[in-house]
Length: 86
Image (cartoon, rainbow, N blue to C red; front, side, top):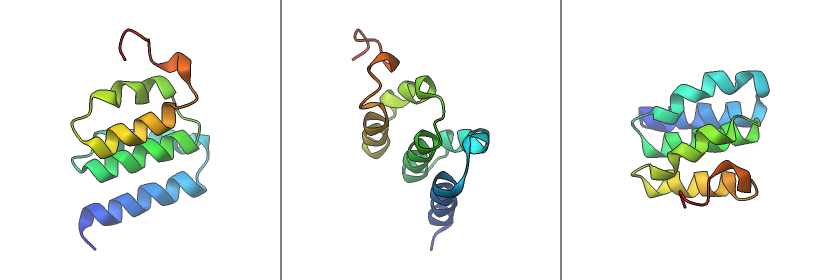
């Protein structure tokens, strides 16, 4: 497994088993060089009830996999993204 694959697995595991206190550990992974790690970090932050407004800024990420993860995370949070930005 490549190093980014291991990092992605660790982020996913923390997202599944962690608590709200672990969100701060996940935040640096939102800027990871690997798009798949960033997307997994988005899912993990959402699972742990992290800041939705911070995720909304990632709608402009150049990687489609990240944008899809953010859209999924924001699906029911209509207040998180101003309509003008969409």
